[in-house]
Length: 333
Length: 172
Image 1 (tube, one colour):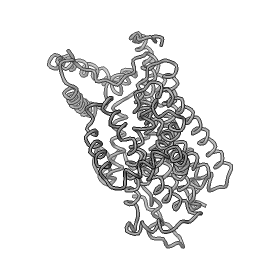
Image 2: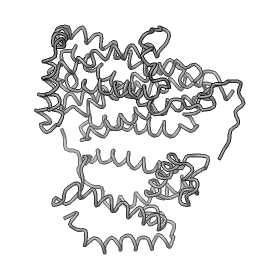
Image 3: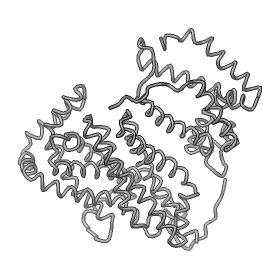
Image 4: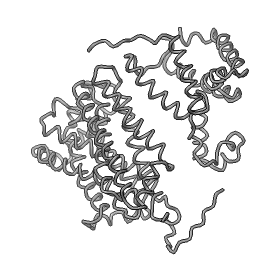
């Protein structure tokens, strides 16, 4: 058993010397947040491009996943809170300089379109499932929900209003989904005591990664060849952007102060090197990119393989950033 | 879409290539090729992560945990990751990349998977008793003219031929 003696003037019993305060649930929450942001972004974007009928999976069916994973993510977040019963206090304040406040408000506002969007397409979702997956057990549940909504007093009126103004809602949702995607990174980068997190590039990097995982999921779920090819191309572009951001993140760290250089060393020779470069960059970005290029060139590649690799890579990336970030600090100075 | 080649590689050429890779593996890593060793490292690392106290005391695990690095940081783990990535790419090149369960048409997928799991468990136990599997003991061992490699070859393939008759229905 190795023992480490910490000598510190700080008295923060739950933080020091236990540096891992955030664990798996936070990483998973960030993954769900990014994925939901990506799904809503694509749904709104392609709706505005007039593709609602030619890309039914993207615009009509897949958005039903978004509210489900946002709720799952929020439950994970609540589970992580020390004072669970005080969570509502976040919604009594808005602090413009606090990313957590931005996140809490964005999540609550985006929940409105995230729930109403798939509800307004329930008829189409049921029809799509009946056509493509007639044995799906969800159909009964969705039928029941559809009937229930029509019987409720106020909801049908709200839905009518929503459907009439769908284009405007789509514009707002695009904005909100980008804020949500960036927030999953900015939440970490606001911690100035954690040099690995404290970089402005984390916001765009997490946004790109989240949108990329959403594109992978849509590519996997869609059964339309044109839609899949489109997402293959989008994903390739996003992977390239992600690699660009990752390289620049390291360039930024290595040309910065000693703490930042030490933080980067966690991923460049330190304990997180192998999982980051082999599993996230190698298996989660480069290998799926090779497979997608091969697919676009006419080789037959089951879409599930690159899609699964991208989703796993995105999930692992968040786990590594959450854990490695907490291992970085100024304590080494 | 043009039809990409669906041919398998010439088995003699593939055998020579494996030999070349074996030499390269000994040269670069100091170890041969292996498969069960990678799984063992992952299992040891998982047990260590879940229950460190148990792993540091149980006789099978304690020799492999507590080092400077994670028990999963071994050459074989990376070799197997490379094998998976390489297999996916080469199968895609040959136009044979698909997700399927290879079996006799007369049995169900469930039955095939249960048999595969049982077979895998038996082979895992055997490879630990014999200190290596087909790749780690037989091929790497024969590569350096180790007697255990030749005995392993006779035991694994001889045993396979003897037992195969009883389980032929899984395949035909």
